[in-house]
Length: 141
Image 1 (spheres, rainbow, N blue to C red):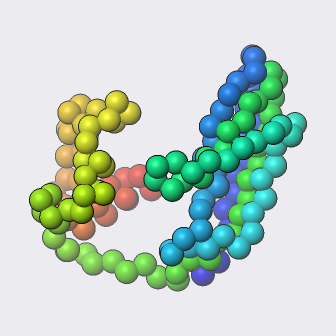
Image 2 (image 1 turned 120 degrees about the vertical axis):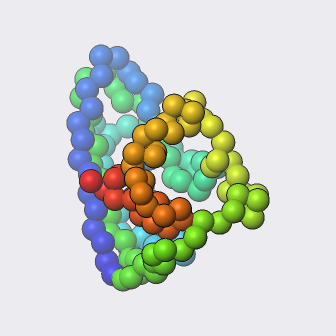
Image 3 (image 1 turned 45 degrees about the vertical axis):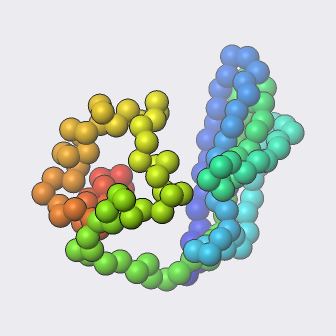
């Protein structure tokens, strides 16, 4: 299935401002980048890097004043995503090592302070897939 996405934003800054943007999805097993357009007005030199998770980041300096950022892409994805409602959770001691870092507290998301909100979001959903779906729905809404 082909998906088209776009984003346009205007950023106003009172002085030159270094920025790390993450506006370009990467190609991989689940999706393929067919085409993309990335425009900065005014144009400034931009360098790209890949973070520890494989995400593409763009480093640039927005000059004092306004900058318009426009991104457009067409992606090829699977037409259907396999889901398994009711699937049980994987016990923590069986998770692969590379997944464990996502369980650690972060200064960006203090898990000890988010517990009540998380419980509110999942409500009475069964542990496993159903809780994940409740979180996905909450994010989407």
